[in-house]
Length: 94
Image 1 (cartoon, rainbow, N blue to C red):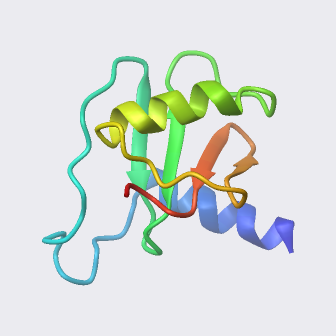
Image 2 (cartoon, one colour; image 1 turned 180 degrees about the horizontal axis):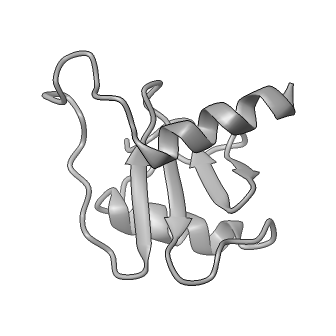
Image 3 (tube, helix red, strand yellow; image 1 turned 120 degrees about the vertical axis):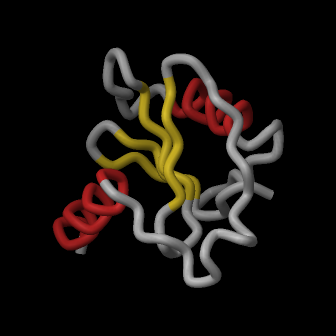
């Protein structure tokens, strides 16, 4: 199952598909030096560090970056996960 999710996640991070409503309801993300955030078509927030890729043990840093990208309102929970060098927050921005 994880092998199927990885290509889908990476494709979503490379070029996120536009949201069905044209992005009218998409949360605005702040610019944060050293990090990029991408909303996947399912509404999940994928956070990537631009310099050195994230490691699995850096969830706290990824959450801080997600909070900064979301204006302090990331919807974090027990479903947050790490795939390759990307931390994914299924709840997106709150």
